[in-house]
Amino acid sequence: MMRFGPSGFCEEFLKEHKHTEEMPSWITSHGLDAYEYAFNKGIHLSDEKAEKLKKLFDDKNIEVSVHGPYYINLANPDDMMAEKSKMYIISSLQKMKLLGAKKLVIHPGSLTKNTREVAFDLVMKRMSELRILLDEFGMNDMYVCPETMGKHGQIGTVEEIAKICALDERYIPTLDFGHINAYGLGSLKTEEDFENVFMTLKKYMGERYKKVHIHFSKVMYGEKGELKHLDFDSDEEGYGPDFEPLAKVLKKLGIEGNVICESRGNQTKDAQSMQKIFSKLID
Ligand SMILES: [Zn+2]
Image (cartoon, rainbow, N blue to C red; front, side):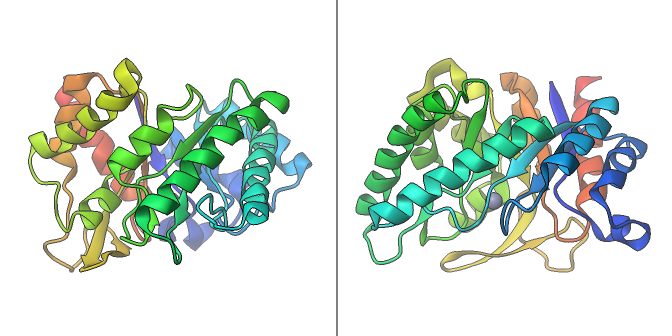
């Protein structure tokens, strides 16, 4: 099953609302069934509010995922700082249990002054160590979802994410197709291009490749990859990817997961149009 929904607050929502408590009804009234809550700038959510939101989202049968703090960097050359990043992941998961969310999206890390190889080895080492913390803190039914990234200075190619996720069943890939396309300077055009993304996962993860978390939006790019997220009606022509070929591949391979729309400003509307494209294929 695929669920569709927005990340954060779109412009339309903000015209008449300002609280997350109003989001579950908003999502249902738009025929959607997923939402991504943001801990981007930190875990600023009280236990009380998390529990209240869980009830509201559960009542509407909306599956909530969480985007982890941007300051997590598992490629940090400093072990102490990397230790802190691991603990931000644990504290995010603890709050998510109250919120009723099971999938935590994280950006693996930035290269900073390291070569790509050294930075990636550090991420692999820390993600491997994180498994022990997940055991210690009783996180066996929670998922950490490292994301494919759009900038060349970040860890997060499809192959890197596949290798990280192969470490543990609690690791599920977040495929951000706008990022993948931006990183490859427009590499996603045909159905085959999209299918190859899943085949790379399969190579390292086996049949577990069918369970993913998806971010989708059009992303503008330059020679170093991602510049900014666009929406489907954007005037900036020529920046993909298109959702249609991906929808066909999702159906063909029987992929399961949520499609979260990260269009700039128009996330709800664009999530609806993707849902429409996908459901037409099913019929
Ligand atoms: Zn992200």
